[in-house]
Length: 388
Image 1 (cartoon, rainbow, N blue to C red):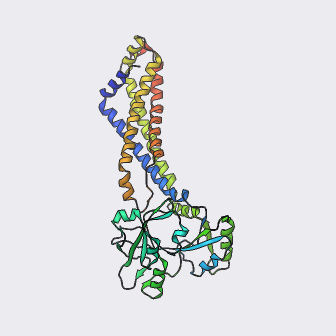
Image 2 (image 1 turned 180 degrees about the horizontal axis):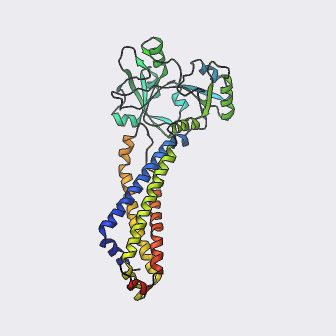
Image 3 (image 1 turned 45 degrees about the horizontal axis):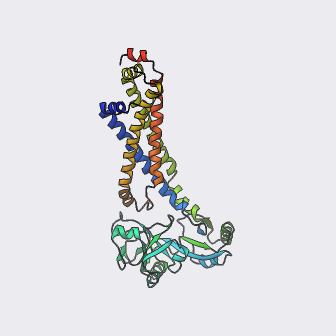
């Protein structure tokens, strides 16, 4: 195989080669990015626990449930623990500094979500006062918070009557071992919210967003869910009990068919780039008629001319794929920080980079086969007589 001729041809058309490599690099980068976004959206569903159920209003997730439902749900056979969870919806200093905050039963939170492991502080410190809060390590890193930090949160859904922000003190930092609970959330005591609403120190709905059920060992989730729903069939407010995975999936579907949309974008880009590489290789083939004819006249086999065109295509695509994967890995930390609020699990995996490289190599094979096949079939006399 005359490898030096392949390199010589690529160097002879530097601009065309560089533009083709650059186009493929952009395509691979985009595919890696889009796949990571899709995996991030699905991470909560995949990482959901099988022994947890979510009880919400049958009307809408935005309709709060009565406080009295908790004790009734606890009486259903198969229910080990029930924890309130109320979306707070505030922000830190500026609306752009938005992240998830939940009011929960502080004495039941870690038992309900055992994947949350405290890495600084203690659960006792968190329980010590209603104004204490538990924050993820990602949130602490982003805003520079540490144990004892005072966090003022401006409420939107729940507002203070005096117009001042809600005050929380960091009692502990946690890290989650599962993607269904991210490390960019603030958890605080429902008691703090409830007492503020009852005393008229704050304004907002007096209820619970959802109840999280932790099942007893060996319980059938379907039977427990049916029993909870039946318990409130006659009101005052009907409920819908789902698995944690289904509950997480609802949030993804609220944004529409995002996975299909992103996948179609990536597929369209790859198809366009494949046509561009194919055009490049066809042009290279046309410009090398005489070279191919001379090689065949010197005794080189058809397999050699076939391999020259194919390996040239593979070389271009491999370089583009490597550049695209390298760029995606280099920018991963930037995108992870930028999208930590809406996509806290953004991380480019080894499988994603392998897929990007695999697609680049596949494009090289597909785009190089037809020109290589034509080169193999080209007769020596026809090649030498051709006018290029």
